[in-house]
Length: 594
Image (cartoon, rainbow, N blue to C red; front, top):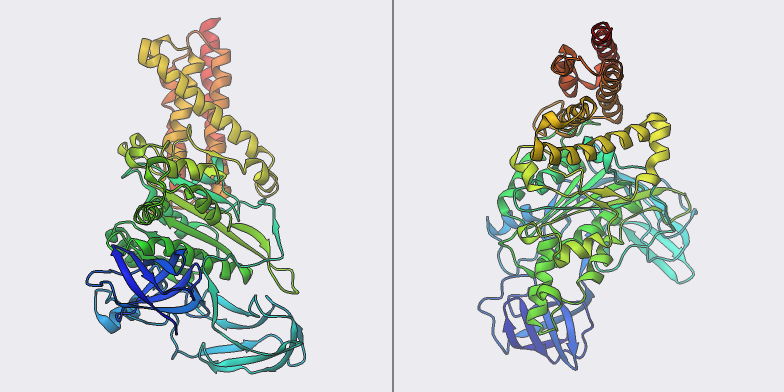
């Protein structure tokens, strides 16, 4: 193993000479403590290394060991239900070996080498296979079937030997005979984190990722394989919104990255997820989740690695044919790590001190999303959806990370601090947010829910925008200046806000709404709007608006959100009640006019 020597230490940056044998992004072990590091700059035989562990006590003259390999992750059974640090060291394994605090230089394999897995082959000796083909399965958890694939960097060939039964991840379970010689296949694969995993073809984003959150599914949907960002100031609900997505989105695998966020928030995730039930299977949510924790008190350089570690794991499950959702909380902390390392490397700073390559690094990350046809003979589809939280200082969306992210992603869920302070959750502003997938997913909604879905959504959005304009008039001259129709707009919009857009994440029923329930709820609100509008048309002069706005059925509309999914059909009764209670008011107004 080639050895260099340290000449400079500056926080997480170590400069070493005699590194002529090294390459960019090679992994190295720094000092006799064997701290993990990655080469990020080469000048002659000098290398700048970002170290993923605390560098206190290290000085010039100490050795740097060149491994000759890039930073890679271990892929195989055992990742689900695990939680890793930013460089894929298992935190439970570290605790068992070194206690509650991560000891410097601790080396523990990401996947357990002792645990045995029951391997069931799906191919036979003599079968022709190629890279990406599934050769067998392992029941990793009660929910997730781990599909073992021919490694993506192997040539096509013939299965020479394959065995079933219990094996560890390092045991050879199959031999592949190719023109280049024989290849051993184990359950364990390694893949460099900075290199996207290959696929056959990327497809259009035409299927929505159903989240069960009404404001997202109805107004600002994200497609499977799409990209979304949740920017917002401190305390506006980014983390809780991402938790809701992780719990309820109809993805089969969830990868959650806590990148530079507070340790207490990550603790909530670690304690909460094992107790939460997966709505489809009734099993704990952790049985389809991978957690990566690199909190704000952990080494800053490892924040960058955590993002790439997470997305490489997510791509691996996508290649099996699963729909994967990746939550990154938050990319701002990752960008701050880039800025710190850039400053120590003495690079020319860009806007607000961020490196000039911030935009390209953000694009590299988000562009690894997509709905794809996976490698292999069988045409199986996988999807990787990315949702990144952005934490702009002071909620300023004009800062570089927010702007760089908005140039790339297709969905913007803008959080509003004023909504959060009014206890409106999710605090997503319907006036600021947008989704560029609306036209893509519109046919899906029409086919699964009905022709009216898109028209109803447009009408509801128009009412909310009208409300914003009318509120300005009310603030200036008072509500008496509005016509009866305009007051109805305010009433309907209030119902949309409080009864539809507001959602209680802690309520066992309201925390999730199916598309059918969302459609039925909006249909109730708009039915009331249309019926009341017809009454106002007939009886403009003497109609008692307060009576119209305080009908008993309004309370039933408001309570519809707490109606269990199996009772959705009862909303048809509420529709009938709306017509029965509103219609007589037109007659009263008409008689007085006469």
